Length: 222
Image (cartoon, rainbow, N blue to C red; front, top):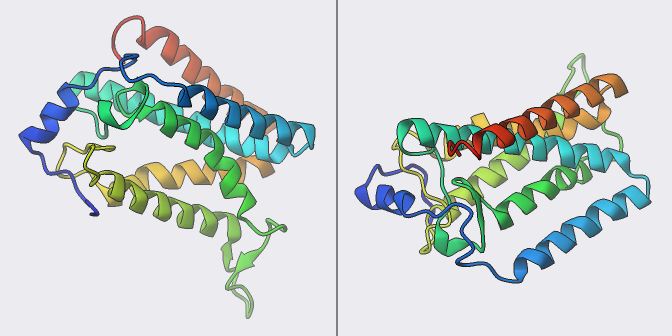
């Protein structure tokens, strides 16, 4: 069953209110296995000197963390975040909108997106006859964003409430435009930035993530 919008129901609110962030009640060994897989992928790319893959992975993953922190702050201020994950759907909830399994998937999503582009990343679709066409990186970002948004609509309809949308105005369309498109634009464009700009982007994003986590978690905001 696909769910395209939040329903604003009391049931959804109750589910969010029951979330236990960073509780080990459901913890199991799949946590370690998934971490090992992520380490293997990253170190394999480093060993093979595929540094563009590392840049793509870190770019998307850093932006992902900024969004998750922002979502948790929204939940703290307004009472409910834009998206949440349920206790029943995961072994460990990192922040109210992201669980361990989901976060580790996003640590690899940028690499996957970059690998799906043509070998020549300057390729443009529908070009010719004086038309500039569409960058394969932009088209790829839109395609991946649409795929992820639609899959999130499936997760929102699962019986264990893998995703919970409370607000009636939040759903597939805003997720696609405001969340997933920026994610995959970062993954597809950052690797080809000038080295100084790429370094500045990654240091700024990950520096902000580290600072926000260090400040907001101990203060109980997220």
